[in-house]
Length: 175
Length: 103
Image (tube, rainbow over all chains, first blue to last red; front, top):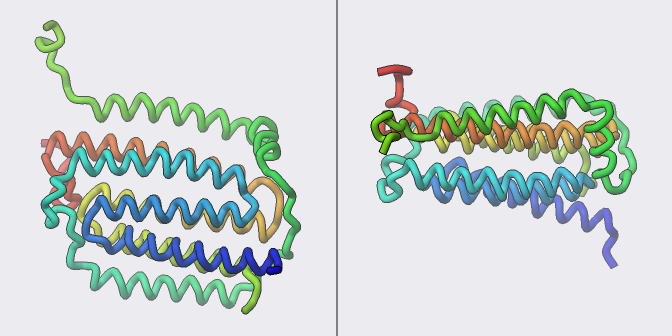
């Protein structure tokens, strides 16, 4: 019988490797459709990591909003704008040879900062399901951000509709 | 092997962030650039949730994460609408070629 903590560690490494692999696919794959599908894999793996972190509501929100909504939107965007057969249009540009060293330097700087900085927090115990707590927080202490968020969503709905629709000439409208 | 702690998640978040940044720097296609933005937002979100669970505790990290997810979805919708409008106008989504805001 395996210890629960040990199993969680193994699962973390599995999902971490999946996340990094799919993220590499997003970044380095030539085809945009494959990159969007790689983003889907990344988001699902990160949702699994949220579940490992006992953030059940966030995990489910990630799957519903990101995987169900945003990735589908991306795929529609790719299909609507891209001549998929033309690899050249989706190609990475030449400055990948400049971007890779810069990215590696940045990564090593971040990791170095992580190593030398003390982490002053103690491990806290899991507090069970989080959904009711998130609901209480949103309708209590964080009510103003919550309402602002709904206002933003309404503005986004109208703004996106206004920007993405085709222009209709007045004479066409009369027909 | 040390047990998985906060540092492991932070390292993973850093790797995701750098992947997103390389994507931002190298993609020519505007939708490809947006994919990089999503990677960066997910890296930040993973850090927030990891700090919330393995760090200071409490529910606030989850609240922030849900807020970030909602705002990221909104951002994607607006950006894709702009990309579609640009495509209708210029017939291309190459960010190197679209260089003026008016005709």
